[in-house]
Image 1 (cartoon, rainbow, N blue to C red):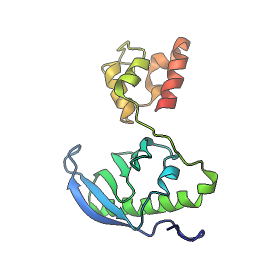
Image 2 (cartoon, rainbow, N blue to C red):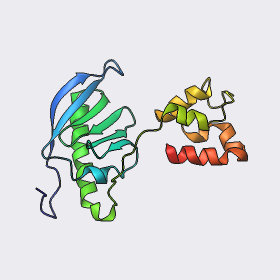
Image 3 (cartoon, rainbow, N blue to C red):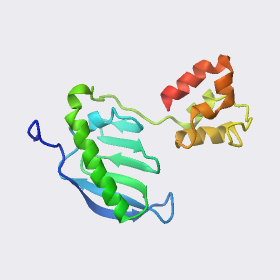
Length: 178
């Protein structure tokens, strides 16, 4: 059941559980349950920046956060690498606001209908110059590919991609991919 046209999509996301974060000891995973299904809003959220994967069949959407990830399902949300419960509650509150803001602007958005997947490391590496020049600060182009996927580096940090015009198409492909 859709809310009235002028009301928020979501009232709240309740914190239902925390787990230890295996990716970063000392941090937690925060699991929340939305006050209603996110099915109708997920295609609009999938148009936002920092989407890593979107599977409309399963209703799964994952975003890259500055630290960790946010994954949304119709009935659950997961934040990884959260400092503590207090930060988790703040993130859940901010997510409610973001969902409601996206829903309010849905008329201006074209909902995503196609699946989207994160680039694989080998896909990124194959587009790099593979010189292992270390100008980016990484020991190899493979390490740089991993850092790009994790959002720790940007394409512009690869000097050969920036300076060699013969690699301009690779640079453009990587920027679009990431």
